[in-house]
Amino acid sequence: MNLKFLGTGGVLGLPIWNCDCEVCQSKNPKDKRLRPSLLVQINGKNILIDFGPDLRTQLLKYKIRKLDYALLTHAHGDHMNGYAELSRQKELILEAPAPVMKEFFERLGSSKKWLKTRNPSIKINNFKKKTLCNVEIDSVELEHKKDYGGHIDCCGYVFKSKNFSFAYLSDYSKIVEKEKVKNLDLIISDGAGFEKSKTGHMGVKGSIEIYKELKPQRMILTHLKHDKTHKFLTEYIKKFGNIEIGYDRMEIKANE
Ligand SMILES: [Zn+2]
Ligand SMILES: [Zn+2]
Ligand SMILES: [Zn+2]
Image 1: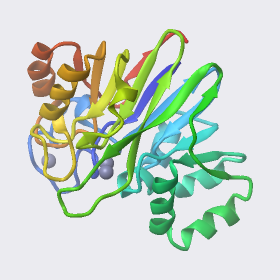
Image 2 (image 1 turned 90 degrees about the vertical axis):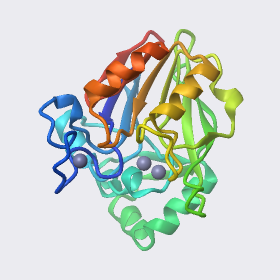
Image 3 (image 1 turned 135 degrees about the horizontal axis):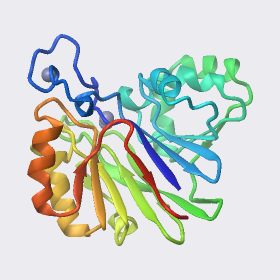
Image 4 (image 1 turned 45 degrees about the vertical axis):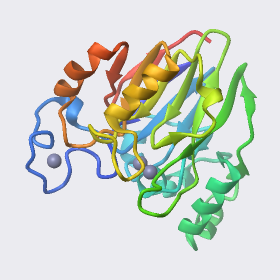
């Protein structure tokens, strides 16, 4: 299993347009972040998690020529607005749990017809737990963005093979199906903001609490904002254990 972070920024990426703050002006390449997305490679199969507005840039930048699956976590723009790129992949399987898919189609509106017309071979399914090349893939129900009064159906994904297991939980304020993410080698967790935010994000401090509670072997934070630099957060977080601040291009290779 090979994991590649195609994007580790938040809703506006980093640097943010028209922002003169320290983080947005940073010269450190690790402070330059595209919208959140992860590529998981299993035995030659490419599984994309989320397809935000930077998808075209990401596919070109990392020379990705084929996608087998596209899994969606939730229907926020920073995770789904690159859907047009998916029209370029024949036989692509696009999946999300039924409630997420319903919300995705509502937000897609008439573009759903556009996508299906442009790519008649695309297969759109409600996600169900599956095994792909001996790797078990399941969704994990999350709570996200309740503080605005609204609630969006949101999930993470957990991958388990004989030798390696990880969960991708990019946007959440609560893990509903907590039993699914216990005893994992790696949790990729929501680092949107230093403090736990009122907009449905754990943030750095909230994810540290999750690390202490669930005790994965390793944690990597993604979906970073412009309130702290990569350097500051890396220094801050290392005293809590094996937690790292993710960055675009970061790769993890694990034996299946
Ligand atoms: Zn900024
Ligand atoms: Zn979100
Ligand atoms: Zn997001």
